[in-house]
Amino acid sequence: MSAPQSAPVATSDVCIVGAGIAGLNALFAASRYLSREQKVILIDRRSRVGGMWVDVYPYVRLHQPHRMFTAGNIGWTLGKDRSYLATKGEVLAHFEHCVDVIRERVGVEEYLGWDFESAQEANGIVRVTCRAADGRELVVETNRLIKAYGLGVTPNEPLGISSRRVHSVSPDYCDVRAGDIRESDAPVWIIGGGKTAMDTAHALITTYPGREVNLVAGRGTFFSSRDDLLPSGARRWWAGTPPSAVAAQLSHRYDGTNEAEVQDWYRATHGTFLTPQADNFVLGVLSEAENRTISAGLNDLVMDYFEDAVDRNGTTELVFRSGSTKTIEAGSWVVNCTGYVKFPDEYPYEPYVSPSGAVVSINVRSAMLHLPAFMGYFLGHLMFLGKLKDIPLYEIDWMNLRQKAPLAFPYVLFALVQHNLSLIYDDVPRRVFTENDLDFDKWYPLPRRVPGMARFMLTHRRERERQRRVLDTVRERLEIRCGPLSV
Image (cartoon, rainbow, N blue to C red; front, side, top):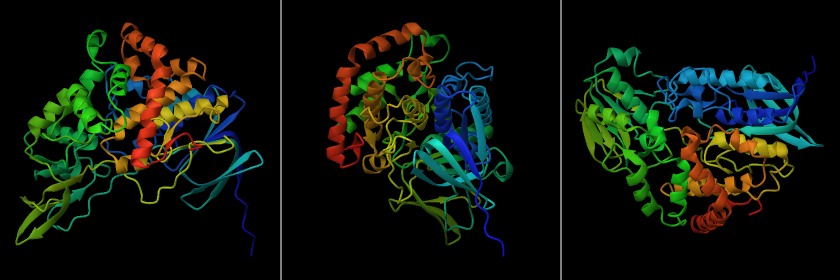
């Protein structure tokens, strides 16, 4: 009997686990410090670069204009109007383009279809173990490791239902514009009120004019109005509110306790919403035109939470959390659009940087900014600048905050962003900020951006202290992890 063979060992200067928007921004940052002779190993469990965009529903589009969804400052080659919202296929093609551009600066070796299993630090080396679907094992020995997990999004499964007379599907496995659902003229019931639900409703209403489309929206969701934050065409010169101005307004309103009051103001001032009640906000963006199209095309709107679909006495009923029911047509389609931000009960905590500074982790238990793309970009730069252990960035348990205080969630993140970006700004070269095309303010012409830039320069240190007090209040009040790593 032959002895088991040792796993092959690959070496690199940096290993990045996760090839989504967070991992690509970390890769971009790394490419600004490494040479062509050095090597980055990029690992992802999926068969191609793209992260969650590989898995999500085929009719998804960006929330924001496509130029502002990239790695660092890598330009798009799409040739579309600047306000165009890129599709899934276009986003995935741009991700491939980003890797090609970065490969001109530094060696990039891809291991796609490999699952990360473990990482151990010893003697200045991080030893990463991965496994392929066929059981093969790979070991990567690297100087630095970036775990770019982001939100850890996985595809939505169809809802489990009792009825045998209706179809339960998920947009991730059922394109609502094609196949059996297209051949059927039965009513559709969309479960959920967030961005996935809005995209699905819009796709159905525009693809099948006159078809019965219904929405079960829970407590309702509101969105930032794209018309206000990101006005299109020449309106960029005089209309809209630059996001830095919105952040400044929020910073003077939120004190760590008054999220209901701040939410009412934000919804009325910068929001758009479909439902009469709209209590949920998770930083999504929607245009007024999309809102009008969906509103005009819906047949029924239920402000309740879906529990089940059951067959009773020859009829089929939807059962809601409140105990109420609604009879629906046999053959109806129930589409699970309840969203992607779901966390397992045991999601382990890991600090955003290890004690040695050799391992960075972009995850929802130790978030230091609001979005994974920003965390990948700035943590990548800070890692290579050797600043991660010196700057007292606040981390926040993003998952616990969302579970304990969903109403406060977005406003706490606004405070976190302003606090940490102020600290980072004082300690990094200016190019770190100028090369960041994720910045929504860059949507506006320079004359519109100058007031916000001046305000930040003059006030960010003073405002940082205010946001520190807000975050400390949140920590004590909600009893969640929120503070420097030492805390």
